[in-house]
Image (cartoon, rainbow, N blue to C red; front, side, top):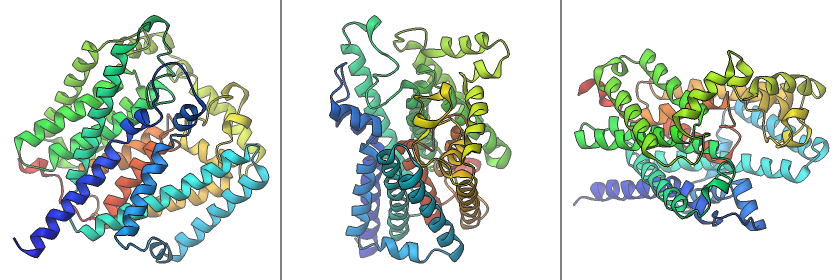
Length: 428
């Protein structure tokens, strides 16, 4: 075996290990805090409430990159001047509001550190993927799919052990999650991973395997009645259908139909503890809305309306990170964020911070567009995550909570680290 072959095999093994580490994050979120039962220790409440497993995983990836002698801060120094100025401006706003404006200073500083970790994690994944020079990252998505199955296995086993299901808190005491609807973040990641497996290979086995993985993700979203995740998955399917001709072919359409059908079947045959789960809850929420957008959105529209005047109280630099629970609208007290990414950023960093964020995101989108030859050389897994998570964040906290931010950052890093070969859907 040649030295080059050894290097390729080593790189694939390392990428698979990275995929398993990221993929098993949901399982670690349940197991490490031992997030089972009704007794809530301080340790368990802290681990689950802050999703501390995610920054721990990100630190592991950063240390891994450093072990490979990646110069993380050199990457920052090589940023274009505009990006340096924008990042410095955001950092200044975040530090200023955390120390002098925020009511909950500790939470604001935690949010600040989390943001720094996400950036360093993204740079680490980018450098690891680029140095490996592998034209296909699907092996990483296999790890994510296996990790989702591991989490579902834990969840199914735990549910089978609950002694008094009628009296159990099914909304707030799901292993690894502060709320059952947060399982939608796992669903979107699993859906993307399954698609990456199906369409990164010409083997029928891989196609069917990916279809199964994505079906379990859809099944979880339907079972938990997480409308935001289902909306995000529907949106990305429609975007792909319009954007690329290969996704208007019978192969992709049949894949989507198979994923939806199997997902619905899996959710239907699964145990549903009450009327707030499954297809019945999804249909009931539409019927009970009586055409009211606020009812259909579970009160989100009113929260959005009431958040705008609050933003106007500190329009330039906002209230600081993670302050919405303390100083947000009266009816939204207890919520961590306003369930909309535009309002979330404007509330915490003001109009100036929001402008800097969206300028950076626009520049990032242009870089991905150019790097991937106008989207032609980006894998479907990365593409689904890069589009669906921001879409999800229009309705929920997909760019507030650590897990979806980590997965989104990973996808962006992989897209920039390419090139990858395009999905061969049109060739089969």
